[in-house]
Amino acid sequence: MKSLSRAMLTIIDSPTHVTLQCHGVWTMPNLAAVAEHLELFTPKKPLQWDIAQIAELDSAGIALLQLYYRKFENQGVISELIGTNDTHTKLYSLLYKRHHEETSAVKTHSWLYHLGKEGHENIQGIGKFLAFLGESFVLLLYTLRYPSKIRYRSIMAHIYTTGVTALPIIGVSAFLIGVVIAFQSLVQLQKFGADIFIVDTIGISLTRELAPLITAIVVAGRSGSAFTAQIGAMKMTQEIDAMKTMGFDPFIFLVWPRVFALILVMPLLIFFADLIGIFGGMVVAKAQANLSFDEFLYRLKGALAIKHYVIGIAKGPFFAFLIAMASTYRGFQISLNTESIGHYTTVSVVNSIFLVIACDALFSVLLTELKL
Amino acid sequence: MSTQPIIQVQNVVTAFGGTVVHDQINCSIFEHEIYALIGGSGSGKSTLLREMILLQRPLSGTISIFGQNIATLTPTEAQKLRQKWGVLFQSGALFSSLTVGQNIELLYQEYTDLPANLINELVKLKIDIVGLPAHARYLYPSQLSGGMVKRAALARALALDPKLLFLDEPTSGLDPFSARQFDTLIYQLRDLLGLTVVMVTHDLDTIYHIVDRFALLGETKVVAEGSLNEVLAINHPLIKYFFQSTTQTSHQKEIHGIQS
Image: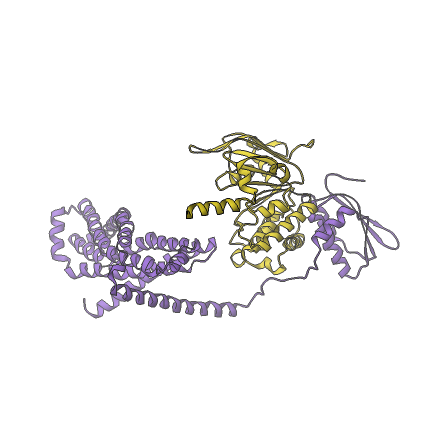
């Protein structure tokens, strides 16, 4: 009996042996049932595979036969194959021309191994980052000796993309932060009838802490990730190798223009965020506490010591340096596979934001100790 | 020939913007053939291949594969057709986040209901058939050499036992020895698996050694179609340019001309 729709297996039991009669179409879409059948079958007598009636056989069919033929043989059952024809043997010899040795995947290791490996890699990572910083500073000193080598045009281009085009998003974020802080503080201050102190709260918290932080976070997400992806893509297309062979050092051509541009742009962006943030606070103060713009600004002159403003702005270049260095460093780590672009871009943003916050904390402690 | 062609290209017109790439071209590919599309850069041979494998649509004209007009397929029919062919891209196009083994496994998991041990066996077979060492299965594409990437990509293209194999410049980027090995492999596979092979190639050695028939594309037309001898019998400047060993002497003439 030939069934042309699917692969079939009939088990014929005789006193001396068992015959596995295979028929039907033994091709990929039709094999699932037979495979299940064979998996459940345990031979007890010598086996005879009869494949004469197989209508069509493909590589999956051959593999299935071979897989269980081998399995049953390994169980100590004497097996015999009958009814082979020319096409069968041709296909078989193509597929199994070489001896197949079992290979196993990479060994799995205990958690202790992974912990040690991760730790070691992290420590190495810090070392590599320091080496990256070191190399870039050596090349910086070299370029400073030959100022004509500085990539002014590239710096300008990066100032435009990281600074000018970032103004809208930074403006919106700063405005909203100003609004939020004003709202939340007013609720508390009004309980004491101390509405006027809203000016102090907004003026100091924004200029000293919030505007620099928000700006840095937006820049890290926006420009930091772009730096990583740009350099990564250049690495994948071998542009960086090409630059090196032509004697264009990637530090001079790629890293420092980005770092300088960001260092120049960041204080300006923070200043912009200060203005918009305070304006956001003023709008809320007028709406919720009837404090006119004139009054607000008059009070601000007295309340906001210049040092808060200066400290906020002065953080800018430090944040910029950390963001630009971390993200360009991660860009160079991207390897030749698509997944690594995503991975290192994420890592670069996470690293940048962490470094910014850590640096801010350091400033806080330092400046408090200095009584500033 | 009396048999019905497997792939028939009829009056295909392709244009990008204002530039016409194909102007009413025709060609037919028969079963068990190794068929090549050749031509200079920009002659539209890769474009024609992309149109055959449903990556691009011609402006007008029809392409039929297995007797079906591929422009009027329903999504289900297209999906079925795609499972009947394997494609080897020029750069391999292995999924870089998966190992070689997983690249092949993926197709079995998506399109068959075979048990895991059989899939495992099949992956081993396909890796072996293209001449890769068994441990290559656990390597990522970025860890492979150029020749190995091509072989791995061929293993993936052969995963579902296709009847039709499309190769985009299979020997480009390989050293001459590996290229000939790859040719032999394709030739053997065609015989043993009953494949029909369609390839885009620049490699004259491939054309001399394994290609049965080919189409020479140029000047937006099919300049010639047929076996090597048939094509060489035609008198056309492009054919001369492609095949005649006298090109070397004409080069030298040019150089002499420049010098004098």
